[in-house]
Length: 393
Image (cartoon, rainbow, N blue to C red; front, side, top):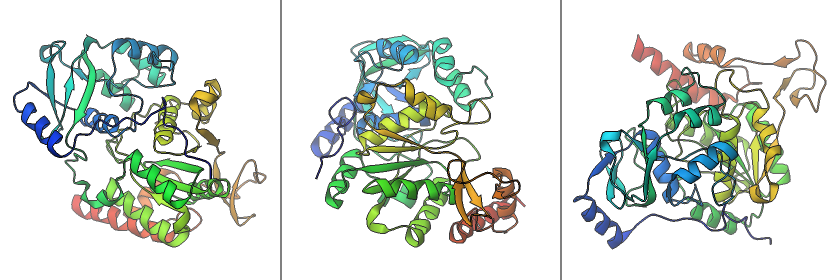
């Protein structure tokens, strides 16, 4: 059997302290200046610590920041599309050489950073480079605009994982580090693994993409993002219930894995698609499903921009293979899922539902058509949507 894909940069980072080392870090942190992290920064810290952001060992310095913004590469030459920064207000900036305690938004000590550099947060460089717009209506742009003006760079040590003020207990059993998913894949005998990124429940078109990928790989990792998302997105615990019932009733268990990714969304479209692929490479996946408007929001990105950007990258350094899918929908004539590659487009034949229409139906306790959503998934969403209607009545 072929071995698993190498992590990005060649080795899997682990900055998590355990046992006596974690206790010593907590004792030290009680004597240090503190920085209170935003939700995004807290997610980033966890992703660094568990190796999901390998080869990063801490928050980026100025050389990496500029290289990522300008060239989508770290100063080492490895592909990297989005800056991973710890920005603070100027009044809160620590000194170079200082050790600083990092606290999650709910007040829990998460880790410590050794400050190697501080530098100006060049938002005028970051925002248009990463988001292709400087429109403050874009949630990712607005988030960066609100961040601090000084970036604090250096390696981190982490003593507390899974810091979630909204209560992660609903899916703790599905939290696995990259090292753990790699072990799982090896135990299952998988050499080729396709990853499916999602921040929404899986509807029939998504299911079609996943099963196409399963036909060419040993296994499938359904890997929902459960870190910070924008207001209005369906809560992670509701989505997890949807994934569980779908896998139970419509997927082959021994060929399907479900774990969560504790990252924050940037809504950066094409560049975020690359980041999501590199993260899954670190988790041990060899293939990555890139669908229509991956990680997009509004109409800031072209329909297939997130696929086309992979053509600009060095395939050897990228290593993970993007699986580029056309938009899929249910065809009444074909009586199944189709795309523009597999079936002619006939007027009135394919079933499309907008997100707004689906939410309206769910709020009324109505199931979307079975051609759009599996009934078991719809039932979970109806229960959630009607509970919101009741609470807001």
